[in-house]
Length: 133
Image 1: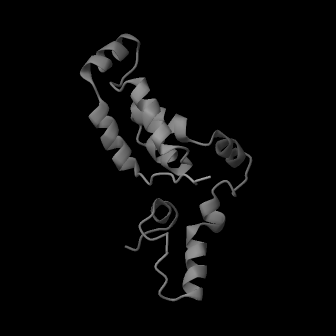
Image 2: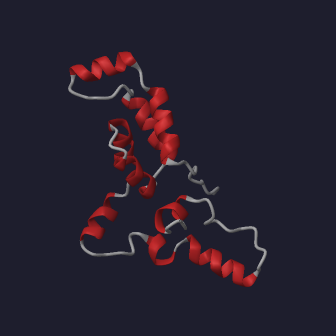
């Protein structure tokens, strides 16, 4: 069975796509129902389906404060990770325990010029490691 890969998409790219999906007609209909966005829910679901489950991306989208982004975030998050974190478990943030950076270090130790490093430029790099000033 072929393994499916999750497309690597940034929050900025998702926000840009959601802005492009904004439709004034849908916004008017949603406004009548008390909603403050103009993206068709079927389009939101299709976007979430394409993104698949990406908890870190979901958190970034939620922090944007934009309703369509938050709706997508709800669809792509891992709810159990929120509950586990509330109980003090830190392993739900596996990147902080042993993430890509660890495996990159092992690979580099084995082969100094390894070209398979996954951390550099990844969302994990941005989320968990402070950038040098």
